[in-house]
Amino acid sequence: MAARRRLILDLQGAQDVDNGDRGIGRYVIEHARALLGRPDAVAGLLLNPQLPFPGHLPAELLDSPLLRWNTAEEVQRIVADGPVAYYLMSPFEFGSPGPVAIPQHVVREDTPLLATLFDLIPLNDPDRYLSGPRLQRYQQRLSLLRTCDLVLAISEHSRLDGIRRGGLNGSRVVTIGGAAADAFRPATANEDATAEVRRTVTSIRLPYVFCVSGGDERKNTQRLICAWARLPVAIRNAHQLVISCALDPMLRRDWLDWAREAGVGDGEIVLTGFVSDELLVRLYQASELVVMPSLYEGYGLPVAEAIACDRPVVMSNATSLPEVLGVDEATFDPYDEAQIARAIERGLTDLPFRARLLSAARAATPRHRWKSVADRTLDALDRLPAPRTSRRNGGHARRMRVAIVGPMPPHRSGIADFNARLVAPLATLCDLDVLSPAPPIPRPGSCEGARHLPVRALGRSVAPGDYDAIVYTAGNSPHHFEAFEALQRHHGIVWLHDVRMVGFWRTYTTDRLADPVAFMRERLSESYGPRVPRMDLVANPFEHEWHRRHGLFMTRDWVRPANGLLVNSAFAQRLLILDQGPEGPLPPVQRLFVPLPPPHGDANVRRDTDPGV
Image (cartoon, rainbow, N blue to C red; front, side, top):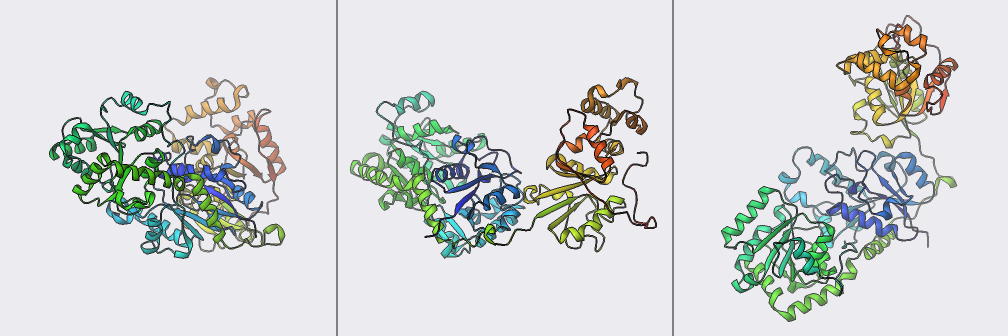
């Protein structure tokens, strides 16, 4: 049997600033951790360079040498080491402005694509979930799922929903399920969960029914509160309803208003607000009964967490929830308040029923542990086609992908025309993008063989990590402002057509800053220290002859973020090295042999260096 492909795990679902450690983010983290624990299952753990670093990752992931930024170079290194499959662990991310779900350098590889299908909840209420640009983005991601070689659904309901409503190919969708984190477990004999809960949440004073909810209407909290009001007075006097979720003040007020209108007395309902994972476990462990009334869930995580803590649970009969426990008598119609009330009453008072719920929970728990999810994930990989011939054994090499950032015609500059002449021959050697400042309309024929984009697309609609190389062309004219600012955010190779950059700083600071002279004085002192004469004696810090006399060429802010440098002559290379000083870091410098410029009669050519340099 051929060796199973290893997985490249795309962890961008854990990088959401607000929810990266909750919900889907937690699923991504726990799933990755479980897969990482399997020998030779994971080839890489990749993070989106356009999103924040997820410092909340557990130690197993943070300490792994496989945790890297997702770049073309990194993916190429992984792919060269053997057959892999790329696993997009969360395809529907809306919380952060990541440019694309799948980087271009992954699409180009001969690598199968996997993705997780959590749910299709946004299709139920598109006005709520898919307003504005989110609709187009959601449709694009759903189209991406249809092209995947394998879709891993977190429940059987999600799998069927994906086929029926999402248009997925049924033969490519496999149910792997979900799980509760290992922290969710029964309390030990030495732990008093009830005392800890009452000490932490002082409003809890009686045995309680516990619900993990949310502000979304699909969580069905209003009907749960109204159902509580239908319970016999004796049960309500002896118990409380405890609801945990993040609550804004308006929602809290609405829920308490509903309770009063339904006839629920003060103190019968406890709204804890957001709780830590540690307290959440204790709340489950100390509960008399857990209730899950949702109208729609991609996977019933609170049910899995409850049974992992060895607690009886009753739940809605809607969507994926009945799958977790697999006991019909534990379910109720979530639209029927009377049914919800009867299920809660029975769960609290019917001892044989409670015993059956606990027995079913103990039998179901092993299915809902991350080891089991990892097992089902790796078994699903066997559905993928056998790996093709590797590149090391005669396969086709991948073409490099390169971006040139700088002016192009109709910009009237020498470097713009130089770049235009460079495009056609360079495009025969690589896949080329040309990113030029506004106006982003090239002269006909000037971008032949390349894709033309505005500089502002870099980091927005185009991921910098997709390129094997980004080359920034640098000169003294205002045409290089956008390239300079992009370089500070996205490092690359800098092609210095001039190594005396005083003219650039004069025009750039005048355009961008309120006090360019003060900035220039400070920048000179910071960059050159004792090499700069007393600044209070310098009348004009932009005066070219003064810079030339003291050898201060102002290249450092172009050099520091550079991965490599290109210059056009040995003389330029010497000046560049001297400008950094003996302590200045200098990336590799490559000297090019530049062809002669076009005849001076070409009316479209203008020097791109400052006339005074």
